[in-house]
Amino acid sequence: MSRVKALVRMGVTLAVAAGAEATVHACPICFQIEDAHVTSGVRAAVGVLMGVTVAVMAPVVVFAVRFAKRERRG
Image 1 (cartoon, rainbow, N blue to C red):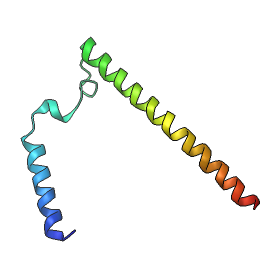
Image 2: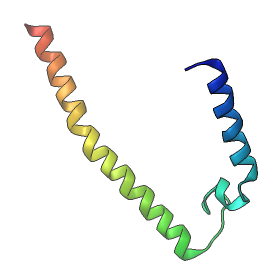
Image 3: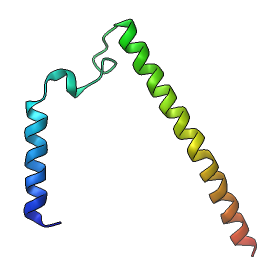
């Protein structure tokens, strides 16, 4: 990517970020708002996403460890 394209993309990104409303910049948990519905929903979403990530990455790690052990022996 050329330097000019990178600078243009950075400028557009900064312009969009500057023009966004305050509610776009952070979630309710970051602002420590105690709205029960939104806060509990965000917490549940984070829990589900972390669970899916661990469930997908755990077999990959197990495979990599077993593969590394097998390569050391052979």
